[in-house]
Image 1 (cartoon, one colour):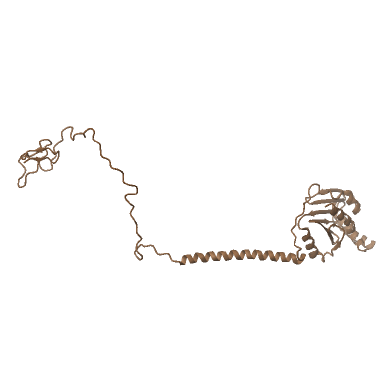
Image 2 (tube, rainbow, N blue to C red):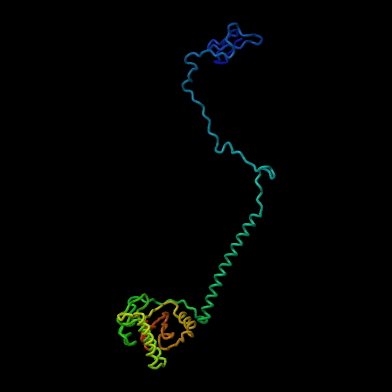
Length: 309
């Protein structure tokens, strides 16, 4: 009976102890031992040169199509049953209620702040209206003065009105300043004397005031070449009506304010040192505490200013 080699597959005689092609020994038949001098089981003789034979020419390795996309499917994970060790705790509705409570609190805070601002604005407006009267709150803005701010009153016009020579003028952002030769004390004393005369004071009282003022000035070492601002005006284009009412209500009694007609839209004088005149949306503020004159000398200048606006 023929048998085949387990290594190279060559056929050999039934009595052969080893393969004639590769020399691999055959296992003995059942009940038989290995022949005397046979190699031990597992013995691999040296391979002949050129073994194993090269693959036959033209042989192509079989290729298989790639597996379909997504194959094999990813392993599915199932949440562990509730109460199983390691399971995530179930989220309760208390956290949602807590968040909603915070949002409600913040909303109430915003409402309170906005309400407080409206209340504050209402109180401020009420205070202003208490002074100016209902409907007296005005925030109108008129046209600001530009260009030569001293063009409304010349130095010659001011000199003629107040009785002293204006030696220089100076433009400001909103008006003009007029300078006369003399110290502030000297000019203040003349202003007080002129105001007293306008109110019915006699010459003796006027001279007494001037001597008192000039005596104090001499002790302070005043110079003879000094110049002083004897008149200044500013034109304010902001809320003229409100400013007039507030000033008249708050300072009218304290300053013995005197109202005038025929000068602008409305006008009044405070303490014989400042005159306020409104013309439309503009407020003219004339200050003259060092002018050697009284209010009567300022009135024509205020009217000329208002007529040119």
